[in-house]
Structure formats: structure tokens, C-alpha cells
Length: 390
Image (tube, rainbow, N blue to C red; front, top):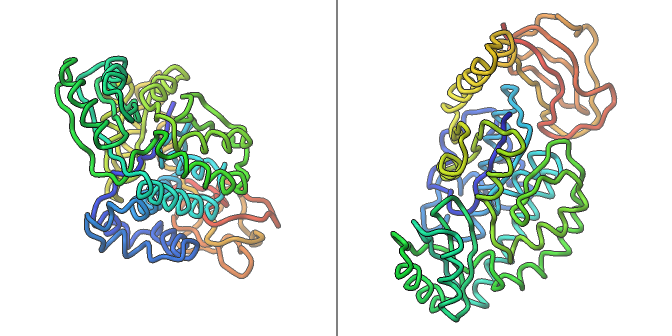
């Protein structure tokens, strides 16, 4: 069973968009730029590390980059049974499952980043990673500090992040070292995220989250707040609001995913930090997909997983050669006449129209069936049909 995980702020890298500029999924960047009213492509390709550290840039670029990777993975026909995201990545996971619309996701992430940035200016704070100390002992260190400092992220065994006032973090760091921490590292952030210092951001964003009206999803998303899977849309207004000032229970989320039967964890987006956390927390296989070159690696990885389960060679073959044709626009879908099950489809074959926009296959193969039905209203990148390339 496969889970997609999506990284949070801090995973962004200068130039992370450049490998994608000639890939079909790059079109998503233009759409996101229109919604956000910003040139996200320039941020992904040209921004330096200092510019990307700004919370307002870090969150938006990581979100869009992760969705671009997801789009590419969807085009080769790979889906997950569960999704989860670390902090900001939870918004990516919800957009990936359809619980949030693409436009809503862009707008919410932009609003979230601005609210967190302003909260950080109003009440300055910082964060630090504590390595080599049990979770409970990190909490003890925060209590001994007798200051504004709290556990912010439970990332993996022996890896916990604390956050609060600079003085509080310094005191808790010293106590953590006295209690046996191997190392404490300050993090280059502009606020004490996932602590009470973010209450102002939570209050500011609450109405925007509710207005987005998260929808029910077929694929559950494991929440940072309670480390439980959720698929009922109405639950997310409270969960996303609470997430801003509550600790990220990532280690607990990974444990829950494994308990639900997940054996494979694929991280989609820049970096690769979550894959390392999954290796330390679970017995499952992990892979990180960040560039187009990683897509072939993903197909081989999925095939190896299928082979290892009861020798299902036929299933491996069928899965690896399935391809999805996705909608290039929003509107009413109308299939063309003459496309029937088993028909041969070439690259560029028009299989239908969304409004006035042609839907062309990006692959050559044998047409299997339409997923969208005649006159159905579809959104950009929604699967329209599937075919086999063998």
C-alpha cells in the first residue's frame, strides 16, 4: 500500500524548478501564478536562498513544486491509498486528494504564509532541532526553561523541534544538552511556528479556511494535529486552524500510516527530508521524487514492490504501462466520435474537447476507456481517460 507524503517549508532549494521547465507539468506553474498574482516560475528558477527563506516565498514555491511533481506522477498512472503532509505539506495533501480545489489551495497557502509572516514580526520567535533525545525529555527541557518555549514538531525518533522566544529556546536547548541531547541546531526561520506565538495567524486564517469549504475525499489524509486519517471535508476547517499553533505530530502520523497497512512511502516535492524521517520511523520502503529524472526510478520502484508481493508479475506489468490523459483546462468535457475501447492512439491524438480546448493524448498506446463522461464539468489536470502503452 502506497502513501504520498508532501514536504513543508524548509525543503525549498534555489533553482528547484529548472529541471521541470520542458516538462508538460510545468504548465501548472503558469496557472498557479495567475491565481496567486505572482511570478512563481521566476521564484522556482531564479530566486536565491535568501529570497526563498521568506515565509511568503518558501510556502508558495514548495506547495506549487510539490503539486507539479504530483501532476507528473499522476500522468504516469500512479496513485496512493493515503496522503499526508508535513505542516504546509498538509495543504498540498488536501489539494492532491481534491479536498481543496487548486485555486483554493493557492489562495489559502498565500494567506497562511502572509499571516504567519506577520505573526512572526509581531511576536519574534525562533526554532531549534533537538537530536538524540527522547520526546518526553525534550518536553521536560522546555518545562525546565520556565519560559515561552514548546515542542513544535515530533519529526522522527530522536528528532524533535522546539520553538518559542529566542531566550526560551536558548534555555531549553541548554537543558536538553544537560539531559543528554547529542546536538541542538538553530533553524533559519522567521517565527515560532506551531506554538501559541501563531495564535494571531490562526485567528486571521480561520475564516479563509472555512470559506474554502474543504470537501470529502476518497483518499484519506492523516492530520498533523491528531495523527489520524480524515476524509470528511467538514473536519478540516478545525484541523487546519488548530495546526498553526499545535505541534506537528509527524512521527505519530508515520506510525499510524504503517498501522493502516502502508508499506511504501513516496515523498513528492523538493528536498528529501521526509523520506529520511520515514526510514527512521517505519519499516516501509521510501523514495523521494523531486525531478523528472526521478519518474523512471519511481516506476521501477513501484514495479519492485509489486513483484515482492506474491509474485504478481502481471499486475506489475499492467500498472507500469498504464497512462492517464488529463484535462488541459476547465469546462464541459465532450469526447470525440470514433474513440472506442482498444483503439490505437498516437501522441497528439485528439480524444475530446473541454470547452473549445482540444484534449490530446501525451502518449501512444491502446485506448482503454474514458474516465470523464460526456458533458461532465472537469477541472485542469483532472483525469479524462486512460490507455496502455504496451
